[in-house]
Image 1 (tube, rainbow, N blue to C red):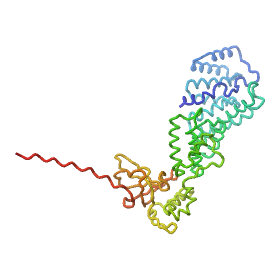
Image 2 (image 1 turned 90 degrees about the vertical axis):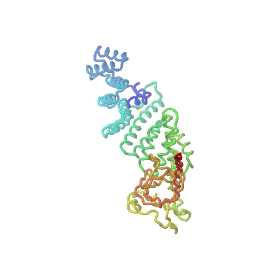
Image 3 (image 1 turned 60 degrees about the horizontal axis):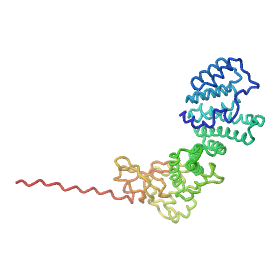
Image 4 (image 1 turned 180 degrees about the vertical axis):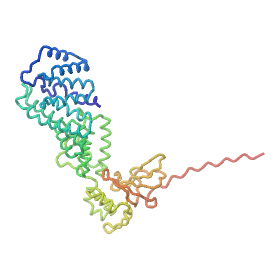
Length: 441
């Protein structure tokens, strides 16, 4: 795990982060004596990380109040990094900021290590959140015009501040995601992506945060972010294999959500252009589209109008109560009247089967709103002879026994007699005629 950290931040850290000088922050720092100076010179020349760490520990023991202790902490963090010791890096960075709360580089390291060490315990998350806030709180002083080095332009100084803000907001977003504060996570990750549009991983975290809110209006935003992770290339992109998997998943989930591929190419173009969805961005769900047409559906397709109304109720705030009171163990559709027409069966097309070994499924998944949407699972008591081919149209009624809102699905307990359209079971191969015994002579 740590070595992934080392690769991820090699371009950010250890050269006095972002060019900020931590050595000699005290006014006119002085060596305590010649021995301290000679010890530090030996540290600077030592190439072996383990040996250098031992010398740094000697320096700390002999000169705990050195004017150069900020630089000592930085070298200790770097030595632990070379040795692949992430926890020790974190401990050194924590000691650093405890010694000097204005040590911005120490706060940066705690932010970076919060994510890379992947400790999701409550104390670790709170530590990461405090480190991010402390880093943001230190920036006005750190990047004040008076502190700008003479060889750094105003634009470079502004960019360096933005890079540091990016790290803090990224940490806050990650911590909020682990802490299940999903909307706050999205807010902070958007701030991070404004400062570093090339962070594809942050886009995936933002997609996850929006998805987990389970709010219908945010599911299209989630799809945008997953699309961004799939299509973004260049510095900061995800590995190609991961991108290919994300692309296939995005396309499947887009169709499941929207009902077809209409508008997908436009979403891809927007995601290629930048990591932030434009103002007013929205992907309409299939249900939203159908709801607009519901009154007309009552006249033209009463069965689909009934299904849309059921989905709307189940996706609402009181979905569980509605299921228990109106659907669970009832006979559905049961001849309910819609627009003056009785609906006796739902009609859908086979999407997939739950096929164990041997290949005799007890569950068949169908799409009702669209042939590509996995919306209803027909649960049979006894295994079927084979899975109906994908696209087979079935008409069915049954008794709902469970449902999930995300992804949406209703489980129906069904009897074979209540499912029309199932293909006939394959005929058994004819047996070869038995060989006749030779006649006795």
